[in-house]
Structures are given as structure tokens and as C-alpha cells.
Length: 209
Image 1 (cartoon, rainbow, N blue to C red):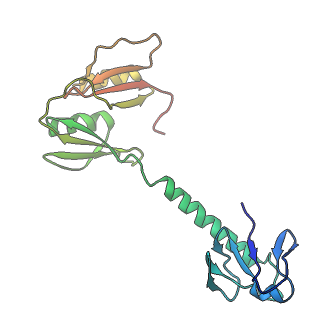
Image 2: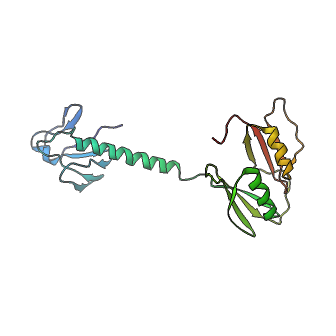
């Protein structure tokens, strides 16, 4: 984290000095001091005025650069930067995985039972299924008359602590096992829904909690 920067006006030949590790201006340049923190003005200093690189503030003649107002300003700026950094990280996220189906109603029945999801909204051509606890991304169903060709390039991995039990349950809902050559010690079973869309049931130590 950088220290607050100090810029002395060109018409004042006084160099900054250090006190308590914080740069200050002394003598006639004190009232013309420009103080910013990472390009943002230090709030709490009196006489704020606009200038290059953002707002510019003046330090009171008898004030100390380490006043409680300065500390508060630094905290405010830290919160500001943290919030904006988080927003930058969250500009793009997986909101839903879309699965094509020839029968919307049948697909809704299967995937809501398989995932314990609920229908958020639907019409005859599209449905959005969502986790009722809002912990996981949505699964959407899109009606398509185009027949499935070949293997899906994208598929779901469904994690569980009881792979074999979940495979049996999904078979009871109408899913089928896909013929597959497994390596020894494999942790997954490849399955398909009614439309032939592949997905995997994976043994995992991770749980929904």
C-alpha cells in the first residue's frame, strides 16, 4: 500500500519533510499542500478544491498529518477499493447451463427431481430451474426439434458422496448409463437424460454444505 503523496507547488521552493513516517510540507508551502491517497483525495482535510488527478485538499496550518480524520479517510478509501475490486472480479459468472430438449415438460420433471431444483419460470419453449437455496447456478431447458448428434461438447458433472446410490436413483427417474471404458479406480459414472444429453455422477468428498 502506497503512502499519501505530497506535491509542492512549483512557485514554492520548500521540499517535503518527514514526520512520524508521513510526508508533510513546512513553512509557507503548508497551506498549499496537495494530498491524495492512491489518486483519491484524503477526506476530512479542510478546504477541498479540484485539481489534476482528482480532488485536492489543504492541511490546516497546525494540523498533524496523522489525525483521526486522515485515518478515517484511509479506511474509507480501502473499503472503496475493496468493493470495486470485488465488483471487477464478479463482472462475469455462470448464471445458467442450458440443455436442449425435445420435450420441455418431461425435462422439467426429470431435472427438478434429479437436482431438487424448482422452476423459476417457464414457457412452452424455455424453462429456468433454480436451486431453492440459491447456492448453485441455474439449469435451463430449451426446446429444440433438432436431433442430438454425437457426444455433447459440454456436460454436467454432478457431485455426490454416494455415487452408486445416486446412479440408481437417477435410473429410476429415466436416466440411462452410457457405455464407457473406465480406467481403474474411476470416480464417475457417465449417464444420459431422456434426450441423450450426457452427464457424469462423480464421487466427491465435497458436499452442498
